[in-house]
Length: 63
Ligand SMILES: [Zn+2]
Image 1 (cartoon, helix red, strand yellow):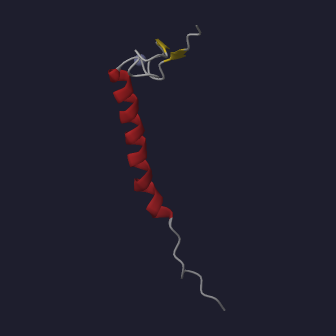
Image 2 (cartoon, helix red, strand yellow; image 1 turned 180 degrees about the vertical axis):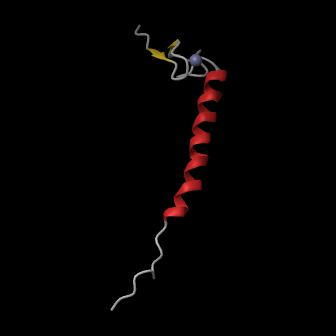
């Protein structure tokens, strides 16, 4: 029987990848929520900056 062991992306704890590991690849619900929260925080920042750099289509008049 092969046993797959992964490292928790949040804290690095080794997690045995099987049906008992409910929060895989995380070691626990807590680490999963921390990672999810960080990810959502990142995605909230992107839309704040993106619209500012939209160019005006009619800035340069053709001859
Ligand atoms: Zn963890």
